[in-house]
Image (cartoon, rainbow, N blue to C red; front, side, top):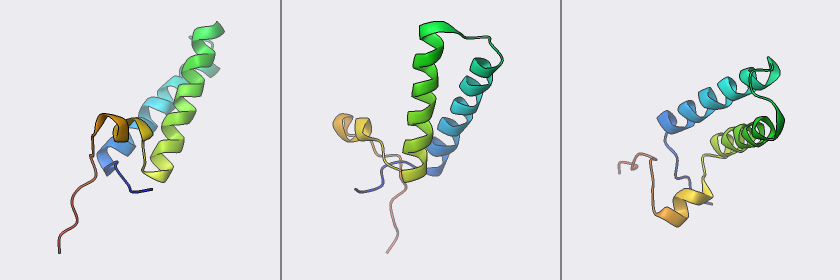
Length: 69
């Protein structure tokens, strides 16, 4: 698994996950939509931890900075 997420992308995903979790646990978003968003937040955190997004591979995106030799 080759990394395809840069630090900025990872930070933004974690921040979005925190906001979604806060909204869910305060009762602002509930029901099926709340559950789906909470699962999405979990996926955001998981992909941020491993620095790899399978969807980026399918679409052909790579936000990871190039290594300098």
